[in-house]
Length: 206
Image 1: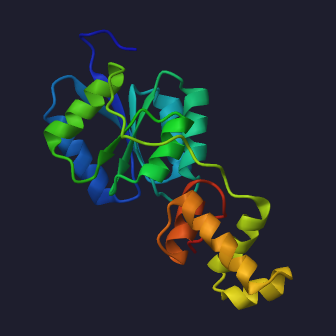
Image 2: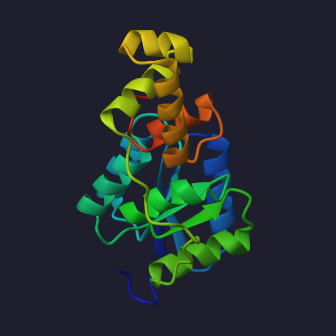
């Protein structure tokens, strides 16, 4: 960790250029904070963090490439002195449970003010990051639940999924209920998106 007189070194990882530029500008008003790199996908976030060894990685939840859980694991393994602050649009308690259990230090909203962002960075380096009130990470999906969810992602109806997997439509509906509960999802599309974020499914985006 840097001495008290040295700047806090930050890497920003987000797949939107405008947001990365905005974060950089917001951090520039903070004394002794230096943005030393940025990244637009999971793989480059890992590579940049390993190369630069920042004090803080500001990491978007949803970026193309490597799922966020895998990114966290790689960063903590290769740059254990880096604190990871998750940047998100929503304070999602289920997702928070997964990511905090995986080693993230804190969450901050994309709607945060410059002062709030600077404070989050400083608190993270001081080991005082404010963690959201999140439950322990729920169990991951079972093999059958992943099969069902993949077919949901392919656009199949409950009846078609049942025929494909040789199970009843009622059983498919029960799997859906369990999947939604474990992922904290509100819809089929939301379930697929969350499963990818947590590394449970391949990237659904083209």
